[in-house]
Image (cartoon, rainbow, N blue to C red; front, side):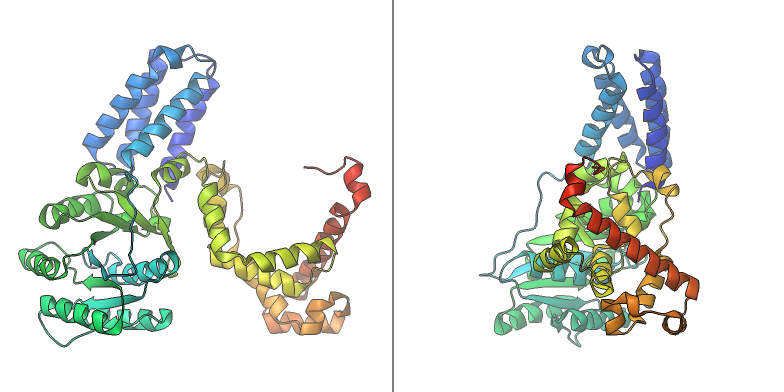
Length: 441
């Protein structure tokens, strides 16, 4: 995410930090490079102009020029301005379990609206107490959209409302009555999209808005389309006045133009970002965390939140006890891999660590295939072998390699690494070792 922008900012700031003192010429040169980097990231030209002007004004102030670390001060100013540029104004969705809450999802075809509708329903059910969602299929032009919503609803055990009517306002009205009858209190309307904006689409959406009187209208945009997404957002906002934006495919967006421009152009904040294909891959948008990611400072808070959602506290305590007693087994290891996978890809997780900018990531070989091989090897072991790896002799290693589609060498390597890990755990848990001062942390 934002790889190219991260890389360019990293180079600019390294130059600034390398100088003991800064002159106005140094800062002007850095501002030209920042301007170029933002334009290449497909950020709106007017926004870039204002951004650079505001940073320049603060950067040439006496406080910065006379500072002992002027380069770091400039980075701090850029960080603050990025936060201001994407500021959400503390916007958050709120739900009341004692009434029917309504959200209308709008956007062009192909933006990921239907999948995001299901993701949002799943997230709301977990986040808000007593929320019982209903997915409403209002896309009457794309039959696949209704079927897609039905499949997602079944997967999440969330009901969906469909109707044979060709009038979306009537469908919306019937859905409200159905929700009241079935005691469902969150309706999310998946509306039709188009390849481009037309008056028929907008009229239809205005009619749905009039019937539903929604608490929120959320505009869904593909982050990878950059300025196109921003321009479409402006038009949708002019016609419907939406509440906020959900940017999809943010994990694949190397530039970041949409995320950096959309608030300034529409006046409406980014509320959520889609970070992958899984239902759980919808994150709340925080401007300060996103600014830190762009500048390669990591995002520890989101990493902690992911861990809290994915890792069972009781299981974690049991595991810690086992590790202390040197009773860690391959079954435990397999469970840890499963919990880690729930948090996202290794590349995503490493990207949230401070200092893990795009350049640092290039030096780390994140091999997701290797993780799958390890999982396959452990799954090819018997339950007894997982608990007691010393049983795994030559013939068993051949059987495990064949069963996992790997080589005997790969099985040997995993067994050796596992034993080394257990030895390290045993060493670290030895009081004599800790008292010796040899503990590296």
